Length: 85
Image 1 (cartoon, helix red, strand yellow):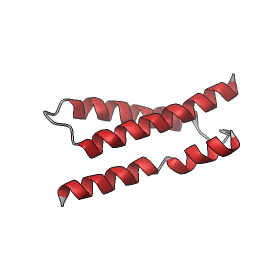
Image 2: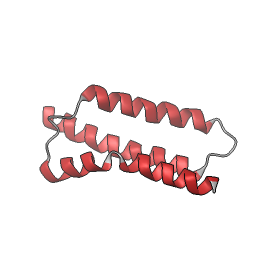
Image 3: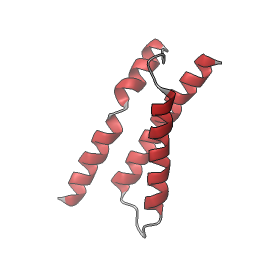
Image 4: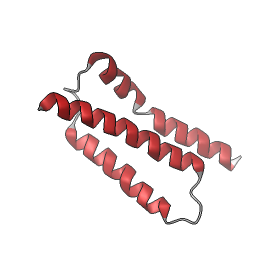
C-alpha cells in the first residue's frame, strides 16, 4: 500500500507542471512564467535529489518524480531563455 501511495504522489507531483509545459509547447509563450519560480522549483528538485541520493536505496517513484520534474523545468527554462535572448 505504501508503494502505491508513493507512485500516486510522484505521479501527481510530476503532472503539476504538465499544463504549463503543454501551454508553452503549443503557444511558444513564456511571458507569464516567472524566472524566480523556475529557479526555486529547479533548486528544490536538485537539492531534493541530492538529499535522497544519500539513502541506501532510492525509491523508484521518487526518482521518477525528480527526473520528470527536472526535464519539465529544463524545457521551460530553455524556452524562456531562448525567447528572451
